[in-house]
Each structure stands twice: as structure tokens, then as C-alpha cells.
Image 1 (cartoon, rainbow, N blue to C red):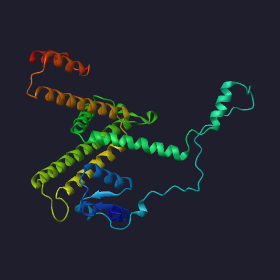
Image 2 (tube, rainbow, N blue to C red; image 1 turned 30 degrees about the horizontal axis):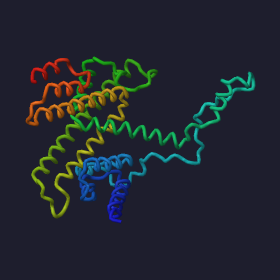
Image 3 (cartoon, one colour; image 1 turned 120 degrees about the vertical axis):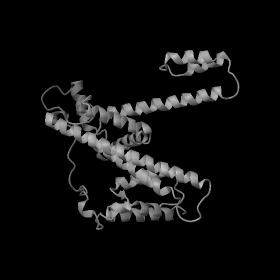
Image 4 (cartoon, rainbow, N blue to C red; image 1 turned 30 degrees about the vertical axis):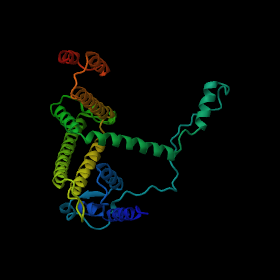
Amino acid sequence: MADEPKLQELDKLIAKGKEKGYLTYDEVNDALPSDIVSLDQLDDIMMLFGSMDIEVVDSAKASRLPSEPSGQTADPEPDDDEPAEPRRIDLTPGPVGRTEDPVRLYLREMGRVSLLTREGEITLAKRIEEGKDEATRAILSTALALDKIRAVRDELRKDLVPIKELVDYPEEEFTEEKEADLRRSVMRELGTVDRLLREREKLLDQARKLRAKAGGRKKRRGEPPWKKHEVAAQSKQMKALQTLRTLSLQPSLLDQWGQDLKKLVEKIFVAEREIALWSDGKRPAPAEVDAFLDSLSEDREDGDRDLYQKAA
């Protein structure tokens, strides 16, 4: 029962956003429950707004936007009465030929079985997109994202990499003129993502300073002063994610960024183990050092072992 008022406030906020087509940071900040302090919780709420095409803007931009309902510009809902276009290929063999042929029998049976219903295909596609978005959000939440985006922009600017290797685009539509236009467009959009991520970092830095200034004290009334900055930061990250999505970057590129992030996390984990081993005030025995070194990943540089053996 305690959650009902919170849900009602959120429902009212969503209804207001659908009516106008946007919400301001102040409106979101005032309507959010006071116990929402986690960035993950804010991220989920901003994702919810994004899925409903509700943009979160500042007050200055809101004053320039139309206040009438945005229903006229919304995409029409699909008509459930219209028959869905068949997507499965009919593999049933014709009357000519041997019906006892095991390959033909197999194909005929496969043609009769629906592996996924239309609803199942839609659900699976949504889950795949959600997984991609989650992985991309994880990358964008790190400083590594800025380095990678700037590196790609530099490679494009210096013509060091073909645009085909970065963007998933139909091969048959590629022309020399189209490739040049696409290169400029991708560089421009990556610049937008770069700017959004830098603005997000600035907002998060301001939020951290406000938290540190407040210390452990809790305000009696109103929202914490840093929440508005965190909400705005999440909005910047959502816009960066949406921009990357429109670019249709090659999955292999995002996969490589994810692998680089994973390696970075592994290095941090190893460094923490090293610090814990050497900072306990006791000098470990050589056998303990060897066991620790053997547990490290095989791709570490050979010089690391020499370094630790010299330190021992």
C-alpha cells in the first residue's frame, strides 16, 4: 500500500508527459519519491520516459516547445485487424518427386511447425534490443567511452578506417557520394555523443560536490539539492544512447569496446589483489608470491613476474 502513492505520482507524470510530449527536469524532480537516490533507479525511470517518447528538457527549452498535445505527430498504432504479412517460407514439397525422401519429409514437417509465434518473435527482439542497450549504457557510463568515441572520430577524420567497418549499412546502397555523406554524418553524431557525455560528467561532478558538502546531513524538506543534477545527467546519457542507436554502429565495434572495458575491470581487480597482498604489514613468503603470480591471467606481460620476484 505504501507504494501506491508513488505509482500514482509516476502515472500522473507519465500522463502529463504524453500530453505535452516532454517534461522538464523540475517536473521530474518534484514528482520523484524522496527515497530514490540510486542512479540505477533514475536510469530506469529515464528509460521508461524514453520508451514512451517523452523527452526530458530544461525549462529554457520547454518555453520554446509547443504546449499542445503531441498526439498529432505520434506514429499511428498498428491495426490489429490487418492480417500480419506471412514471414515463414513454405518449404512443403510439391506433388512431383518421392514423398518418402527423408529430406523432403523433414522440410515438410519443418514447414508445419512454428518455432516462434509472432508475439514470441517480438518479445525476443525486444529482449535483444534491451540487452544491447544495457551493454551500451554500461560502456557509456565509463570514461572509456569518451576515449573510444574520440578515437573513432579521429580515424574517420584522417580517413584511416572505411566507414563500412563502423556502420551497419546495406552494401548495395553504398556509393562514393553516399559514403562521403555518411562519413560526415557519423562524425557529426559522434561529436554530439562526445558533448553529451562531457555534459553528463560535469553534472555528476556537481552532484558529487553537493553530496560531499551536505555530508551525512539530511534535509528536512524538499529534495536533496544534488538529485536535479543526477536526473539531468541521466537524461544526457539517454540522449547519447539514442544517438548511438540511430547511427547503427557495427555490433563488432561495440563488442570490442565491451571487451576493452572487461579487460580494464580485470586489471583493476588484479591491482586490488596486489594491494591487499602487499599492504597487510607482513612480507609474504616466496611461495605465496609464486602462487599469486600463477593465478594471474596468462596474457600479462612477462616483465610483471620479474618485477615481483625482484620485489620479493
